[in-house]
Length: 474
Image (tube, rainbow, N blue to C red):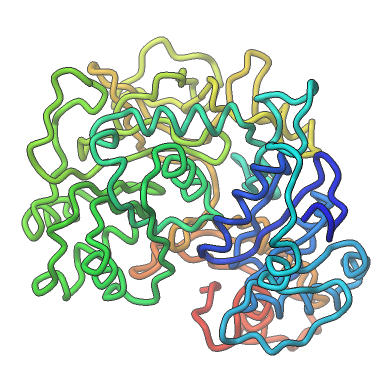
């Protein structure tokens, strides 16, 4: 990376791939060099790939060969043609790779082979008297509580604090050295955080991009996974799968889920079929808490704050982690609420050591998200009960949870508006049995236009996903 790409301090490395060993190696290399990295969500299209590379001024892009076609499409868009000469492309090869390259491209294996005998002089490489625990580690893109996607900057301090607090909480501490199946993508904020937990606790980790539920059961049986970490949508599918009755997942002692609320009915199925229970015990009571059954942990967090709380009660998401402060404000007046309850809800505001540093290159957006007293306004609505446990009841934000990923309506709206026939558009999320939520677009077109709904769907789906794969637009 240093020699081939002529990296300089604080230049950005971009990664666009599903979870794989190479992904973890690239993150490790960035940590050793003290080079920030940014993850590009594989579901985005070439328009937004170019936008993220341009916004971060990325020096290189590691990309799975499965998604390389989006790079070629990006180059054909006039806004991003200049990136061809500025961004080095490294392809993580799979069976679909056709070996077509240009001067700014090489494969991951070629990069490793070319420099496998080289040594770096120090770790981290860019480490001197000016280095700090508050140096940038990663830029994770999000819509925040509203608006266009922005890059939330996390530092060594925020990432390490969150990893230590997650690792230290029981029952995570009990099982932290035993095999973890990570179903959160490494490009997702949860995947990033839990990879760091695995690093610092020396936990064996299995990365899986599953195409069907049976794959997950196969991996659990093969590797005797003790911990399973995945979105509520995945856990819901696991619980309701027809395979549950004849598969042995007795090695699993703990399941952690996050991203959206897990239905109580799912928890009941997990307990009935597999003995995995949501306990009424207190997860942060290190002295008295005893693990006497398989445990389901519910976690709550955000891109800007990382993990905020974890708990083991189906009605709430537990108490905040030690470094997290919470307050609630009136949804309409924005005044602080002294008392919140089920009958008086407030917007959740967060402050603490794990709060992001800023939105990359967007100081005005940072000011909108974090007030003068350092409180981040999450856009989520809830309350704290008498036991100090956090309840999430709703969200003000407009983001759509598609298969565990955050899909930002404004992204699709702005892309649809690039179509010459479109004069106006609004995108909302609608419930979907398989994908949790999918976007639905309401579009107005020119009076003389003959464009059809099917053509608009093809226009969007062609940008976001490969042809013949599942469609993102309802």
